[in-house]
Image (cartoon, rainbow, N blue to C red):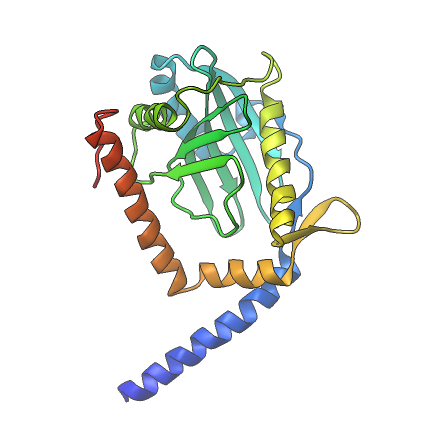
Length: 256
């Protein structure tokens, strides 16, 4: 009986690894354009207002100004994205509360981000979802889903900036044009994935679709056991990074 069970499980895994890329390639679309729209708080989902509300006081105490709620639109298939955007201009740091809604679930996280004159961007966020596409050139991201306090994540972000970009000059868009940064980063994402061979621009120029390479690799990365191995590996990397910051007395952070 145990032997038969293992055979059945192996068959299920084989079927999932065979069918998932086909379904993903047939259904996945990513918008080639992003036009953030400033919206009234009442027009965004309650989770966005709730999470942004919990972060607002800590962010204000850290010197951040609230720029507003932005509807990012439907970027990926069957999703809609919203951002509550903040900025600390003297330090050159942006903060945002990002929420993505879909028929299956609504998920959110908060983030700190700094861009520099040489094109480098450093992000620290609480997103627990690992990317399924290659890392972007000049765009470094650290994910700490175990951090629940915006103040703690802010200190981690500042420590990462000190470690990796201490001598670089911050780059900010002109005041009143901060949403252009959202637009630029989103539109660059898919364009850069096209360069990796994961996506290609559709004939209408409105959306990016997955290539066979992209469909197979993203689907397999999301399936067990690869997904579990990736999660364990990434968590170990983040713990090592936090230990490095603590060991060098850059910032006092937890490593658990």
